[in-house]
Amino acid sequence: MMIEIQFDESVQDALHPEHIEYAITMTFSELGLPKQNVTLRLTNDEEIHQLNLAYRKMDHPTDVLSFSQDFIDPETNERYLGDIIISVEQAKRQALESQHSLEEECAFLAIHGTLHLLGYDHHEPGEKAEMWKIQDEVFQKFSYWLRSVKNEG
Image 1 (cartoon, rainbow, N blue to C red):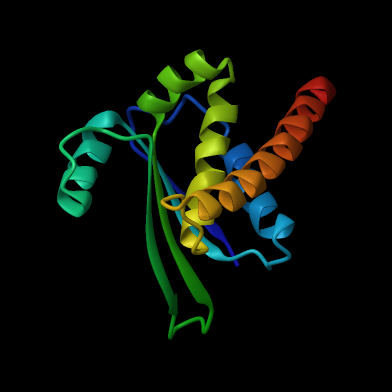
Image 2: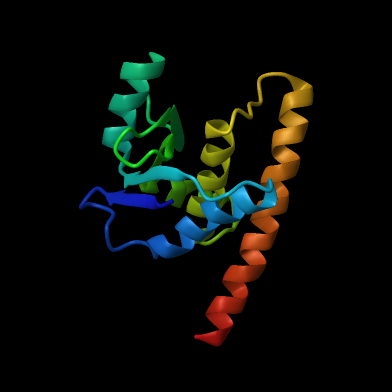
């Protein structure tokens, strides 16, 4: 199983993608699931705006989009869960507001997107409470892990 990471060239140097990949892996682990095949695309406001308009009819950029695919790849016989697209530009703005690092904010958005791919949602209060609980638990563990990695380096 693998997590494929794609970059828009405008955001390529901004992050350590392996850290964001680990946040996705931690999400699966927290839920007792094996690592799944996912594509993570780190992009800019312009690209996510176009995707948001095309697929959600919302004419503005957003922070994260998830596109569930959930099919068995006939070539590998492995499940492909879907795609997560993150606007690094929007994540930078949100990181300032929430006093996170850019990596933490992108990891938080990746966790959120992964939960959506797994069927979690936040339209109803009960669903939202469950999704937020898992999201916060994974993010706290990720933040602790990230601090330990940075202290070692």
